[in-house]
Every structure is written in C-alpha cells, then in structure tokens.
Amino acid sequence: MNVEHRSPMNGEHRSPMNATHRSPVNRVTVVKNYVVLLRGINVGGKNLVPMAGLRSCLEDLGFANVTTYIASGNVILASDEPIAEIQAQIETALTKNFKLHSELIKVLVLTRNQLQAVVDKKPEGFGDQPAKYNSDAIFLMGVDAAEAMRVFDPREGVDTVWPGKGVIYSQRLSAERTKSRLNKIMASPLYKSMTIRNWNTTVKLLELLKDR
Image (cartoon, rainbow, N blue to C red; front, side, top):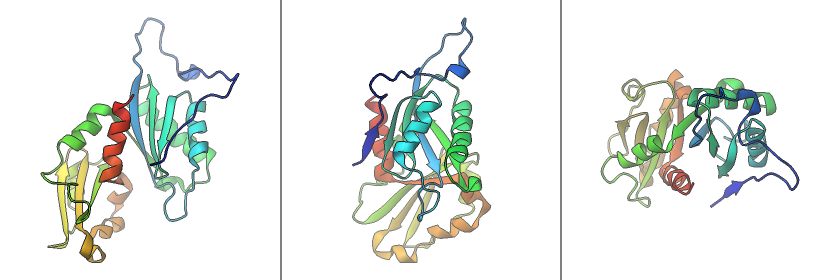
C-alpha cells in the first residue's frame, strides 16, 4: 500500500484554505473531506505526474490534509469550497503545472456519502471473488449510467456490466480476460467522461475517507 501525506515543512505556514477564495464573513463555512479522482494521468508512460508534486500543487491551491493513494490519480483532501469549484481549480492547476495533454485530463470530486453509496449499492457478489474476476468501478463524469451503458458490448461468459448511480460496475472473468470487450469503450467519445478504478482501490479510498 502506498499512502502518502504531505505536511508543511518546519517553519512553513500554510493557510488551511485558499486565501483568495475566502467566504463572506457572515457565511458559516464547513470543511469537508473529499476523494478526488484524476483521469488520464500516469497511464502508459504518458501524462506523468509525480505524487509529491501533485500534493504540493494542491496544497498551494489552499487544500488541506492532502493525501495521495498509489499513482493512478487518487487524492483525499479537505476543503470548504463547493465541489464544482474544487474540480475547476484542480483541472486548471494540473494543465498549468504539469506537461499534460489537456483534453485527456478530467477531475471527479466525490463526497464520502457518494463513494459510500457506490460501495453499498454494488451488485450482489461483486468484488467478492478477486481470484476469479477482475472487478472495476467505472466512474462517470457528466454522463448518466443509462447513456454510458450503450457503449459497452460485453462478451457473453466473459464480461458483465451493471449500471449504478454515477458508476458502471464492470466484471471480467480473469481466465478469459484477453477475450474481454471492455477495451472497446475506448473508441467511444464517452470514454473521456469515464475514469476507472479497480474495486480494491475503490474500497480502500472509502476506508481512507472514513479514517478522517
């Protein structure tokens, strides 16, 4: 397991929230923890983003308690900003601070309750036999599950897909994974509105959120 947390250096002070986005004095602000899924980084040797650099970038934006989990673009952070603002700030900062193909980069911000629902509402038995099946959560960005399901062409006896709220659950028979048709979704324009995490990573991110 690779969970990394960046704390301010000795003598260094960072405001826990971005001073340029302070809320009005009369409004009560609530700091919440979020999981942030970055699409399109560190894939196939392209769009390389070092985790230490990512944590530093996000802290410079004013986010607090920034933690990364493995290198596939998983972040847990705290903020008092609205989800849409968090997403916009991170997407802009990524393309500004790292050498990336911007059209491939997207950010999905989820609350603990949203991620909890993904785990709680999984299909029966999904993810329970990791030796037999490869199980993935395909998170959707700005597209609903009914529309996304149309781009899947599961091979009978190999692939199974189920729609969920904001997610597609995908399972492949490990012994026949070379026959899977899951990769066919990459040819669809909707693929740019999806980011995939294996089930173990999905569950671990929820555990990390609960530890906050």
